[in-house]
Image (cartoon, rainbow, N blue to C red; front, side):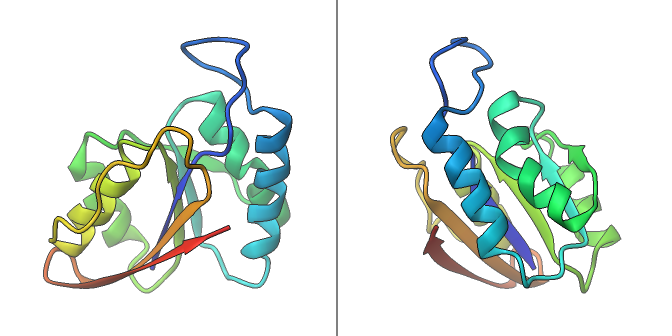
Length: 141
């Protein structure tokens, strides 16, 4: 199971690598609450403050480190699927990467880029065989 999350609301402190806004920090805490009862085997984030800080409360609650990934390197996603087969991983990304990852995992073109102001998307993708036997459930948090 791959739980795909778009990062929480970003601040305006740095145009290239902003911190989370206060609303974003609250959403990050809410994400940890939403996933509190879920066994999480690994957490992956792009190397930006807004993505890492979105999953920081979850990582702390689960006692696991946040690992970096590059969403444009599909072989990294394939390695995650292999390494954590049968487990649950959380992957946090961006409005223009999360939908593409969901499409890659399901083998369908079901998801379009999220609107830049849309921060509450959470896609739960159950992967039996990448690109062939997978389904996604679109939730908000």
